[in-house]
Each structure stands twice: as C-alpha cells, then as structure tokens.
Image 1 (cartoon, rainbow, N blue to C red):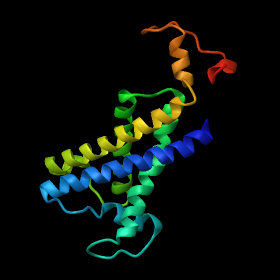
Image 2 (image 1 turned 30 degrees about the horizontal axis):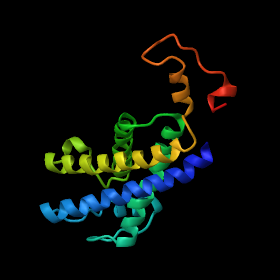
Image 3 (image 1 turned 180 degrees about the vertical axis):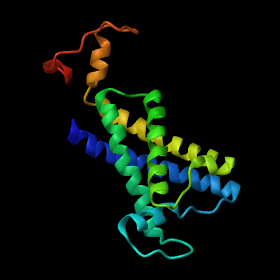
Length: 177
C-alpha cells in the first residue's frame, strides 16, 4: 500500500499542481495579478541559499511549487489507499494543502498569517489550493480504486449506514481477501 501511495501520490499531486497552475494563469490574465515569488523565497530560506531582492529564479520557484504539489499528493494518495475517497476527502485535503503552505511560509518569515491578508488575496489562494486539492483527489481516488476498496471502505461495508456498533475488521481481511 505504501509503495502504491508513493508513486500514485506523486502522479496525482503533479496533476493537481499542473491544473492549479493553469487555473492561476487564466485568473492572472483576467485580474492582472502578478506571479507569486513566495514559493521560491520559501525554498531559498529552507535550503539556506542567499536571498536575492526582486523576482525569484523561475526554476527555483517551480521546484518548490511543483515539488510541494507532488509530495503533498502522497498524503492524498494515502487517504485514498486507506479508503478516504471522494469530494469530502478532497475538501479535508484542501485544508491540509493550505495548512502546509502557511506553516512553511510563516516559519520561514516569508509570509504572514492569512487573517492579515487582503480578502481578495485570501479568496484567490483558497480557490487555487481547492482546485489543486480536488484535482489531486480525483486522480488519487481513480488510481487507488484500481486496487479495490480501502480498509476503511471495507469496514464501512460491513454494515452500511451510520452506526456506532460495527466492530473492527480482523487484520487478515482489512486489506482485502
């Protein structure tokens, strides 16, 4: 399961990153919002590279942007492998994606807490990260479904509906027959 989650997550996260970037470029062409150099600044601080004022190197910016997208895709793939699939799981994952950004940006001093941002900037960020989360989720779910239901789904199938009295599956059947 872990091997599948790793490679499937990297694929799903990269797909999510590509779709998010495409959506950002469309939004920027409409709103006139400039490119963000925050990912590159965060990466430079994380790896101890000297900072340069002004625009960041495009390869450094994209390395952080797509590297973070691919690595976080592994988290969403783990969710899908476990049986946490569908739109609700993707909504939960959107919070993970936003939280990851904020931890890195605030810990490095590159960003400030979202509560201090202009509302439109916050809305745009949440929108783009949600697109990433749902795209990544759709790909991760489709790839995980090829192996059948996850352990959580098998557990829920014992007695469909909302019940508190369903016992855990035996270990030997939790991952499939």
